[in-house]
Structure formats: structure tokens, C-alpha cells
Image 1 (spheres, rainbow, N blue to C red):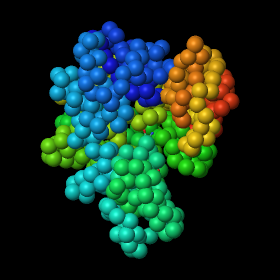
Image 2: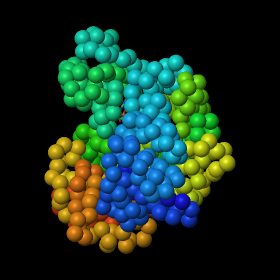
Image 3: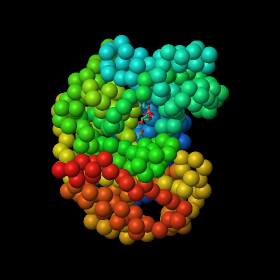
Length: 426
Ligand code: AMP
Ligand code: GLY
């Protein structure tokens, strides 16, 4: 069968890399793809926001299954359009994608169904938002309601910072995503990412991972889309996983069904592991990026049947095997990211990095031009290694980073530090 993956990031490179091993696939396409995806899929430049042209492409190329990677096309209803055209697709429909598309929607659902999360209120104007702050303690978390590429959250340490954040968001800092805001309690703890596949009924837990959101070593500086990740996340003990499934995931899947917007796809819970157990920070309606890359590196089964079963309601018939190894990924980003950065700078040394045992370099913001790889985005490469411990995977990943020649790029030097500190305690 022919399969189409939608997206152009490191997540989609990892998905295509995993799907490329599936014997059931004749031709794997990726739209639009990037400079690395073309090693494992046929990249096609169609405008994925233009649903009729995606449908036409599927008809012209006998596509039997579509996998939608990023949140924007999900929130914009691409799966609804494909389904209406009779094309099976992986990912939630528009109504269910509101779990990520509107923080207010997600928080109200948690309140109604008693799902542990930070206390919060929603506001549509600066005045009432600011007067609410009078009764709250610091730090306090201010969020734009809609999608903001991981940048719509401000953790204010002072009242003046909180006031400024409210003014900035209502002033249009995040465009239409900021016509409403959520103000919530600051939660203390260690973060983890937890993923399940669900067909709206059955829940198939995947593995755990930990992201590194801050741009600088020691988790300093502004937040990014994620500067590195590893899987598994030791903070997610069997007990924490069970509590997450019982108190967060199951009630959410049931609530979505109850509301008439059953959730199908991968559900990504961003968690804060607190003294009282896991609490939900946010939901994402897609695989995490870069978490997807470390998850795919540990997968020991064909991913395609699980994604198809998720989409067609037969997930109870599927299981997945995982390697016992640890996978760790270091993001290489363009100097200046998450602020302004230069584009079209040349990267070399990728073959040497990929030649190291157990190393795969996933591309995010790259393109291939005249045989050269050029950086086109903020997050550019995900240098991924597997090993028998976090320390071993980390050493291999940084060995591979050292082979990559890209003077306009940088990476964090401490990916995996929490887990390595735990390993050293043992
Ligand atoms: P989000 O986009 O909602 O995942 O938020 C981005 C990051 O902000 C999270 O990964 C956390 O590091 C932080 N964050 C968001 N909400 C809270 C909260 N209520 N308490 C503490 N940290 C938070
Ligand atoms: N790594 C964070 C995200 O995908 O949202």
C-alpha cells in the first residue's frame, strides 16, 4: 500500500524512518518533508493547508493511509476532510484536537471530570485578568489560549512580569491565539512526557520520555520547542505510569467520548510529577518533537499496524514491543534560536555522524540543495543514539555531534542530566 505522512520536522523524519521498515508499504510519501526525510520517503511539495490538493494527491497516487504529524493541520481539520473523502487517516478530528488547540477547553474538561491539573481561571480581557492576580501567589503561569509553537506560556516571577505578560498577550504577541488567556497555579516538580495511542476506546500506552524545554544548559534561558530528549524517563516509575493512566488518560478518553468528540490518535500528556503524583500540564494531540525520535529509536515492532488500528478502531488487537535500551537525542539548533537566526547555512559531516554505531541523525529544519544540506529552521538536527544506559547513549550522541561541522549551530551540552544524576546515585 502507499502511505502519506504530513509534516516536515524531526518527528516526521522519525516516523518515516520507522515506517520505511514496514513491509506492507510500497511507496512512502512525505509532504512537504525536509532534507533528510528524502532518504527514507519520497518528498512531495504540496500545500498541506490546502485540503482539496492533499485529497487530490492521495487519489492520484493511490494513497490508502495518511498520518498527520503536526498539530496545526489537526486543529484545522485535515483528518475530517480526508475522512469525508473516504481516506483513512491517523490523528484526531478537529473537535478532539481542541485538547491542544484551546488550553481553556482542556482545563474545563479537567475541572468537569476531576483530572489533576493546576488550578486556573480563563479571561478574555486584561482588566479582570489583572484583578484575579490580586488573590494569587507567585510565581504564576500566564498562557495564551491557542497554539503558539510552544512559546505561549509565561512563568511570571513578579506581579509586574505577570501584568506585562497579560498586556503582551492581549496586545497580540501571539496573534489570534491570545484573544483569551488562562492563568494558572505554578506547579513544582519534575516534568515528563507520556504517550498513548487510543482509538477512542482502547488505550495502548507507549513509552515515557523527558524533554529539555529551556534553551540553555542547566535548564536556563527561554523555552523552546525542545532541545533534547531521552526515553525512558526514570521519574516515570511503574506506579506513576499507572496513576497517570488511571487518573488522567482514562478519564480524558472517556470524557471526550461522552462529549461526542471521541479522541483517536496519539495523546501526549505533558506531566508534572509532584509530591502528590502526576498532574497534567497540557495535552498535545500529536507525537512530541523531539520525543517521537527517541520513541521510534526504541520501537521493536512495525509501527504501521498500530497506527492503522488506532484510526480504524481495532487497537485492542495490537501490541507493540520495545527495546530495553535508552535512547537520547541532542538537538542542534541555529545560533540565535529561539530568537532570530540565520538561514541557509551549510552543514557537513552528517555521514560521519551517522556512521557511528547506534546513531541516527534526524533532520528537522533542513533542505537539500545541489547535494548540500542547508539549515532552514530554528531546530535543525536531532542527533540520536541508543545505549545500555543514559550515560552511554549520551556519550555516543555527543560523539556524533562532534563529527558535525556547522559553525552557525549550537546544542545543549547536558541532555539527560537528571537521569544521569540518578544513574550515578545508584
Ligand atoms: P505548555 O506549553 O503548556 O507545555 O507549557 C510549556 C512549559 O511551561 C511546560 O513544559 C512547563 O515547563 C511550563 N509550565 C506550564 N504550565 C505550568 C504550570 N502550571 N506550572 C509550572 N510550569 C508550567
Ligand atoms: N517537545 C515538546 C512538544 O513536542 O511539544
